[in-house]
Length: 333
Image 1 (spheres, one colour):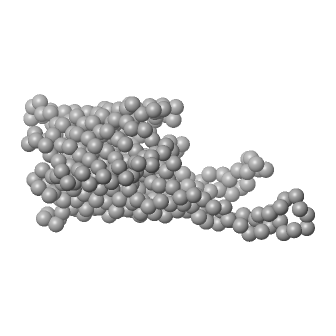
Image 2 (cartoon, helix red, strand yellow):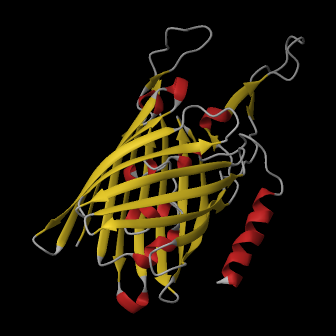
Image 3 (spheres, one colour):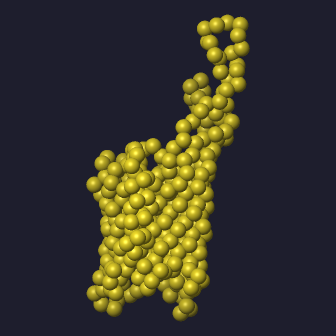
């Protein structure tokens, strides 16, 4: 356990030694997919029990029971469409395997230029896509580890970039009551830069000179940028009042490479082992944060005595950027 924490700490130091604000690609990877966990402020490093918990800490895959899946849809800021899906299969002693898909689409946007501010008649779109394969397992009855390897693609009209990244983490159940510590690193991967025909131009080497070739073929060079790598560490603590009422409190500390540090915290009150109400606060203490309050509710119903079906909803305040609604449907069979 100590060796795992030291490895994560060492890699985190390497990642954040050259940290800068707002200088990363793949910003869609920072969008939280779980309606349940996003409604408690995104404090999910110590959470487990559902497949989408792997976004916050892949080690949660080791605690998945049977086959578990989550699917999320959200109207992101500026009417951008966000979709997320993950399926995790526990194979027993061999561990848990998972397939994860993330997509973001801006829809069609009119092309406008200085000469034609009302539009040229053309339309373009921005798309983001990530496909990941995950694995998690229990090392002991209290320690789990996990890893997700993902492919990334971003496209803006006719230009795109590609890359690969890793999410990995560890969870340790401190006490029999369920108090759990977690630590994870998200989006640790390759650098990327855009290329494509949109960067091809005709160049005039000397605009003041007449008679020369003013349409030399050239290409705009773009810089390489890192991914939005984030180190998380957090604790989840369940408090059982009676057989029908349970409160789960959680808090995460976040250290990203493209912003300042912050805290995420929240609580979930679950009653009759089926219904939940939730609340939290995201990006607490973050400089220049917009909004932060999160709320939500959910239902986890037992069907035919062997299947469970989940429905979760969350609302998150983004200040002047308005609010975001998420809906997650999940099941365990």
